[in-house]
Length: 142
Ligand code: SF4
Ligand code: SF4
Image (tube, rainbow, N blue to C red):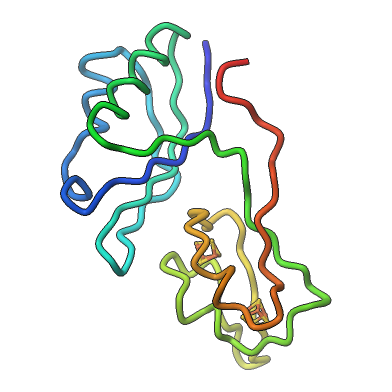
């Protein structure tokens, strides 16, 4: 069984269509949605784990791309450099999944990585550049 975590970016016109259901119906693939978000400009971002035979996997990814969906291997992740963080809270205002949140009553900003959809909105929002995009060492078709 071949399995990869993928990031799908849907254009505004497709963000609410159940396209991923075709992966099971037409390509015999199993998917597990890890995160799904509609961004402020109405594009959709979904992080999912996709499993099946290599051939079905390739065909399924081709199908998604043919629908105008940007498909990326989850080869990057978001990290917070703690020593750069001043707990100003600016990132919590843009984070659509609440992966970044203010912990009360301490009023410290916490980062729960498993909720992160890798939308990257926090990266430019952080005045001290504490949020960084890093490679996560996975390739598409090993
Ligand atoms: S915007 Fe940057 S400095 Fe401010 S709380 Fe978020 S990570 Fe920390
Ligand atoms: S990339 Fe940043 S803004 Fe986007 S979900 Fe992850 S922590 Fe939140």
